[in-house]
Amino acid sequence: MAIYHGCHLFYGLIIGANVLNIKALYSGTYARLQKKGIKVNYSPVVAASGLGYIIAQLILTYIYSESVRMMIFVLLISILSILTAFFSIYIHRYFFFLKNHDMVKQMYPQFGLPKKIRK
Image 1 (spheres, one colour):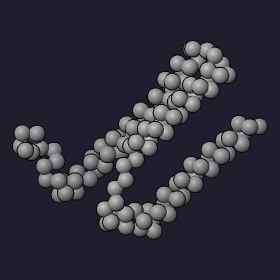
Image 2 (cartoon, one colour):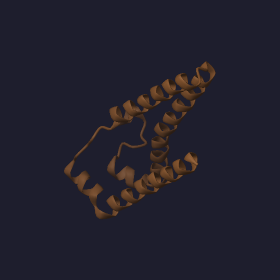
Image 3 (tube, one colour):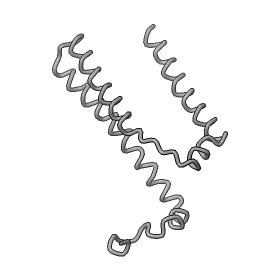
Image 4 (cartoon, one colour):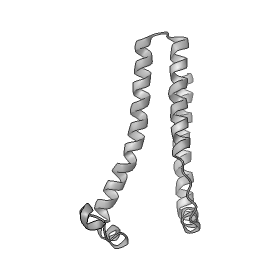
């Protein structure tokens, strides 16, 4: 029964985050933030939360399981999930560049040129 409620919570969080993202996109919030030039570096926050998650999972696995094999599995799955999230950013950028090559070339004329010519 607890897993059933946990799934609903997870689905609710995903749907809620997407609804907030769509509202912020269509209300112009993102455009206003870009015009103001506000840049927030979320990298340390994301790294700290990911590291905290891994450490918490290892501690809980040690307390309840005391199995080194299980701790290694938890560590590997945690690292795999963080790497997947990290690499997904670059995959989205790559597909954006493929679809909008002309627009990117207009903004950055040196885009796609060899390194010797760019400098």
